[in-house]
Amino acid sequence: MLLHYEILDFASFMMATEKERQVREDLVERISSIIGSLWAEAEVRVFGSFATNLYLPTSDIDVCVLNTPEGGSPRELHEVADALRGEKGLVRKIEVIEKAFVPLVKLVDRASDVKCDISFGRNNGPSNVLLIRQYLEDFPSLMPLILVVKCFMHQRMLNEVYRGGIGSYALLLLVVSHLQHYRTNFKHRMGNGRTMPNLGSVLIDFFILYGSKFNYVYSGIRIKNNGNYYSKKRKFITDSAQPMLLSIEDPQDEENEIAKNSFNLRSIRKAFAHAQQQLTMWRHGNSISVTPLSCILPVDSSFHERGDLLRRCRAVQDFPVLNRTLPPLHYGQTSSEGSQPKRSRQEHRRLLAEASSRRSKSRKHRSAGISKKELRRREKKQERRNDRRMAKQRGREL
Image 1 (cartoon, rainbow, N blue to C red):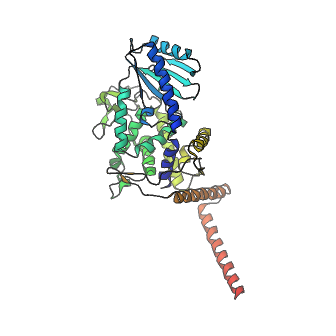
Image 2 (cartoon, helix red, strand yellow):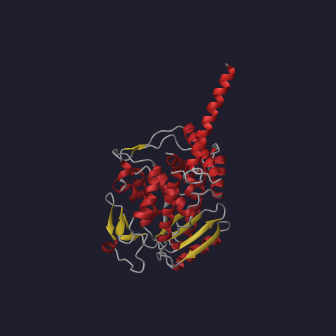
Image 3 (cartoon, rainbow, N blue to C red):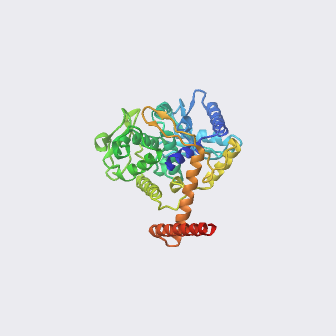
């Protein structure tokens, strides 16, 4: 259960502050104003993780420009880039990517270091926002899980599509499909109950499914109509030179195949399999990590910087492991997934302290070459010595 509460804690830690959201909204407003000065009839829409509140502090802002005269031609991309570059103090870095599957203007805000991707003519992006919000209502566990998985991919640089990674929308659909089929794919987790197990088990099973069990060569993922799997060869044209590619049917366009450009799937699958191994090792006491989530999300400078930011913005207490804020007292309840058990903050702190103590003792004895069996024998021997010492003390008192 410790991983369950740590996932909730991590989701709370990654939730944007009001100041962070305001900074992003101001950037979008400035970009919209500049684009509006170029084409009066152009419409600027925000989509992706920022529009659905599923963004990390390091996530990009996805902006789509509609109703331009040439529909996003290379000339228009450079025209927007030149206009943004000419705005004093706006951008730190700007780049035009013409040869990508979706041509982009990528920029970095000078004041906040927030990144923004500007695309043209993509109606499906903004229309996905309502669909994602519906998924969040249907699956309350989706938000904390996707935040953990997105950070996992970001740390390993597997989140950029033009580098062969999986984009945030495709990654969200993977998690949604996992939740849709959980009762079928992992019946042994359900037991005789109807409620979903804790978030820790669901996360581990996500890595098991997409790290070792799922057949990427023959199978594709469908989300629509409660979800199912389909044959890739029957549904879409496959590339015989690259048979192991991820195939996801667009929930709003059955003829559109999502994630087919994620050519680095072997590295992604390997990362998922390794994450499952690390979490399983921690569960069996064979990991040197203090907490389970730190096995797959190593603490880096960005975590410490965010902890400092949250303490300044929220005036929160220091968190003993990753400088994170404490989770809510309970996880919420729905008819589809049931309720999660409540746990007080004091109990959560106690669990973390016990886990830290166990890991410290385990590291100390493993470094000395002492096996677990020998360690238990020594502990029992020490207990007997203490009992004899107490008995002698009582005898002297009598």
